[in-house]
Length: 192
Image (cartoon, rainbow, N blue to C red):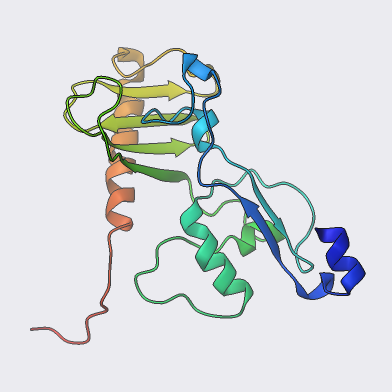
């Protein structure tokens, strides 16, 4: 695609974005397809931003699909409307910032009952560079993985007393992140 844009003389005036909305398990954790378990194979999806104005390379910055619209608008020189979630990734892609955020919120509102849950699955996941925390509605259990020591997500540390302070800090960050993602539209113009 990029080579064809070059032959058409459009490469210097075109941004190409490639991504996906989710991955698939393909046998990870003995699961197929997708579902309400936010293992890395499902949540870490490719994002390629080919831009004549960007520096080539990889960024370790955490980002979310909600960052795409603000990034596209910023690249076009437009301000995002009030209430738009996400942040522009342009500074991270240009190397002016190392990170856009410290954690990513992943929300799931499943449409049907799966995996013996008593009702449709509602869950929230907080992903940092080191940890993944997933909390499910209506369950006493949750998931906490230390991706540094357990990249395969094989040992759930939710009940592990050695991870109690990590769990509490991540729950606090999850709460603050959910609040920061709340809708702020319409923008109030006066107090009642």
